[in-house]
Every structure is written in structure tokens, then in C-alpha cells.
Length: 132
Image (cartoon, rainbow, N blue to C red; front, side):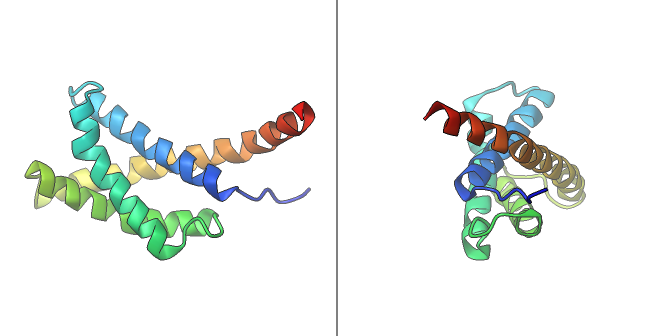
């Protein structure tokens, strides 16, 4: 069985979609609905932190589980702190609790996204080759 290699652009898109999905689910759970404001106030800091960390760490030069984990460990806490700066909190214990929950759920969303990409990527590639 041949190892599946992730396409860098596909991995970047799937990671971005996973993070946006996390923000939208969180906003809906906290009664904010699917408002654009929630996406901007919460999603933008997270996506910006992710983009900077990914660029610095070279996440998409050779996408894999290790680079995903390292980027997650750096970008999500940074994004949460940026979010708190923009929204005026939470700080202290509230930030630690929110951070713990956010770390767990962002990792869940990212891993599910990557697993879907690994499962569906070869199928998509075969279908694209067959169509051409």
C-alpha cells in the first residue's frame, strides 16, 4: 500500500475550513448564531495566527501530522490571545478554560478535516484523471 501524500494547497484549504467550522459551531453554541461579526471577531484572529505560524513553521512545505500539530500548538493559543485582545476578554482563569476547550475542539476539527482529505483525496484524484 502506497503512502498518501497530501497536497499542500488542499491541506491549507481543509485546515482553513476546519478552523472556520470551529468558529461557526462555537458562535452558534454560544448564542451568537452564524453572524459575520462572530466570524470576524473570533475567526480572523485565529486564521491570522494560523497563517503566520504556518508561514514561519513551513507547515505546507511538506504537510503532515507533525507540521499540523506544531502549527496547532503555536497558532491556536496565539489566536485565542488575539481574540481576547479584540473582544476584551476573557482573561485569567476564563482564558485558560476557554483555551483548553478551544485547543481540544480545534484539534478535533483539524484532524477530522485531514482524515477526510486523506480518505477522499485519492478518490477525487482518480475521478479527475478519469474525466480528463
